[in-house]
Image (cartoon, rainbow, N blue to C red; front, side):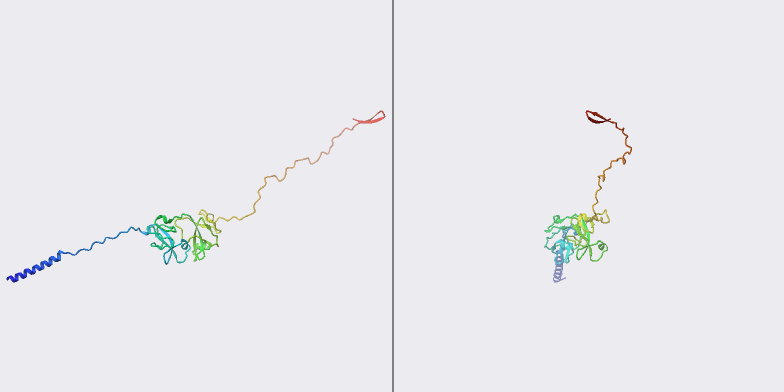
Length: 258
């Protein structure tokens, strides 16, 4: 083999070796493993929530009574305690448009965060049946029969309960949670008196005013009449006839009887 051919072969081998070493000298880097970011948020369904009333279009918090009375364009919104509860007039940043399975409480007007914003109301309620469009109380049978246009309305027991035919105020269509609820007498009145207690199935009859009965007199109506003999004895005792004689003395005559 000539020297020229040998040099050509050595040059080719050197090129191949250089190419192979270059290919293996700088291996391809693997992308760094992505570490998942862990959040400290708890499952919203297991937390306590603040129950607030918001405008459907803007989610701005409004007065609770608008949702209590089912005013159009307003709905209940549930904010977990891990978030900030907005004040009246502020928009709710996060929450649920439906009631969670956990506990829900009303919130103070100024909002905030933590347990301090919650309002605990453990007062019992009185339920009455009303016409939804007017909130005028009607007989309970209309709600018991699930008639359209009628619904139960819940009033705090220390308020005045309207009679049938009167309009209900400051209550809520939202059923209370974990509180005792009573039916009410047809004639209404103060909540504690109008509420029908569970020991009675029917309302107590309303007493009808009647004339006041006179108390029996303890005095005798007539004094006892003393017993007197009805007849006098007819037989008179016999008397001895008197004997008289006339005595004259000095020209004077004197009659003496014995």
